[in-house]
Image 1 (cartoon, rainbow, N blue to C red):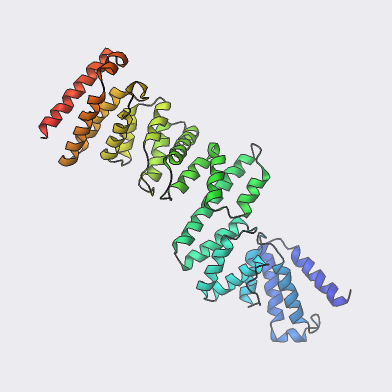
Image 2: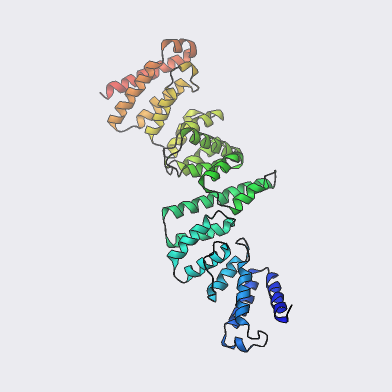
Length: 378
């Protein structure tokens, strides 16, 4: 090995051992400043090989993985000293540095497109770098497809945090964490992984993702809402707090209408009172019309004997807590007719065999109230 190669190897070995990014940046800035100065060609140590040395150090930087914690230093050096890098499908580090340099020089449009491609590349790329790439892209453009990628990456980061925390207490397949931290999952895989970890918070993230979709099946949505409510309740110990949290986050922000039946099933399973749940609905801005639709649905079963809900209580809520809040006369008239029709479906056999005398008396009183409302609004 000649002396120049040995000196180069020693220099690269020295640089490799510098772990602190700031210290490495200082060393590289010093070296390239010297290499690019007018006096460089007269430096006896360099012996006229400044260009070859520059190429060697650049190659050394590009040989590092995107996950290297000094990547930002390498990109900064390339940009500062205008080092020759290109788009390189075989070297994502070089592509990243090219994008960084282009972005800094004002070529934001071209750089943004390639940064977005890096953010979703199928190869290994640390999640932190993917997020950095898409963040830089969004500084230049607010295109919907890039916002969606940013949203998915943020959810992926949150899911990684959840599962990584779990791995400190229970066994987690290493491949799961590797996939989350180094690969772009995309919507489908992200949903699947969220469902695998419903019990530790994946349900919350699944619901966040479903909230952005305009075409989601009711069974899927019901399952995600129920799992989220159960998880939040396990964390806070309060069914009411779980309901409020989900409604605050999603009721006014969901792409589709948020179904309320899962809230009822959850709340009753926690031995909560239906009237209290209706109060929570109103508190969180659920319109009376939506509450009426919910209660009407709860009564609308062919076989009343198999209805899992407290029928008399549901009717009472419709008559006393919902109908009085409907101020539009046309809408109120229609809802009263629906209520009358529903009461007529509660036949005599059901009343005799499935209602206590007290419940029957309450139901008959509610019927009288509804008929009076009906007459008053004619």
